[in-house]
Length: 384
Image (tube, rainbow, N blue to C red; front, side, top):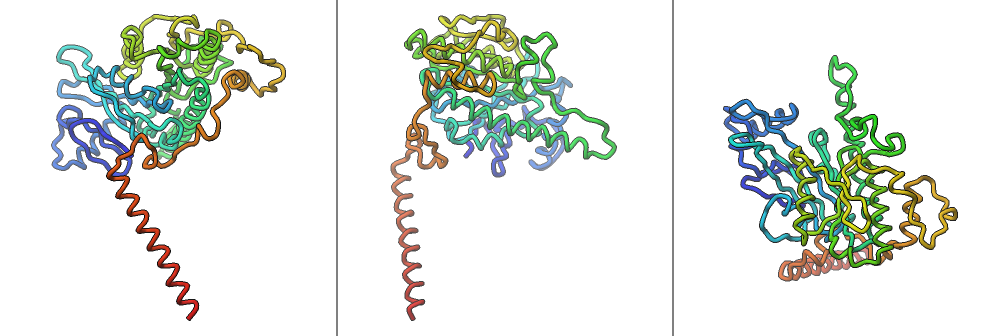
């Protein structure tokens, strides 16, 4: 299920031709059909950019938002795009775009933005935004609801695993495609975070960089502040470890704070348009965390907070597993009933439509009646 934002929309299955004005986004060519224009668009994307009349290249990037269900993803995105409109529940997977001019009378760079709804329940849909065409300029933003610490680790673990598995598959496909080209020499895969880390990156040999640039946003900081100080420290230190382990940036924010949203927008614009993300760094657990990638280290983070936990009894396989075990001792995962995943969005109460639901119920009853009737007729035929 996709929802589009923009002026013009044409799509096949899940393949979305962005709802952008063709006159401003597509190159001006002499083709007579939409399909020829779409083909030219694909070729221009393969070249890593497009040229407008003045010969200047238009940069295109893709940003993929994932995170906690009802964690504020849409609200944060709208603020980052300076859109004054009410946020609505995300319908499975949604697409929108943003444009930004580099200066006066200059081409506008484009950010293709995908947002995954449903928390972890629809993680299979990561295959739609993560494609061979998008990974060359793809970034991932993971938004975690700080007001629900018991669901935090499970959410980040499942979503990052799903995204990473898809990225590795697409990188592998890209390598195979390059090798299969006639006369192709040794080719390298599109750039990944691991390949572009500077040699002096903190703990370079101990971390496992995410395949593409990753930003972790802790949302609802205003509610998070109401937690016990020791619990806040556990959450903060754990997310610092996760962010540093994946070579990601980390920021805590709240849509009720203009200052925090301004800093969040800087991080977003850095990924979406290549702008400067600022130099502010805040690592104190008593304040909102603002930690650009490469600004932290394991020595500064320290060991897992072992409040009432005997670390030696946890039998962890690796440092990440140790942090998980300690965290889940302090914040036990939600029970099976609470974290039951709903694969069919049509059954999710947040998308309820009384009139449509009533008609659907009638149709289901009719289909059940027809199935029962068919069984009855088959029984009569066997008896005769």
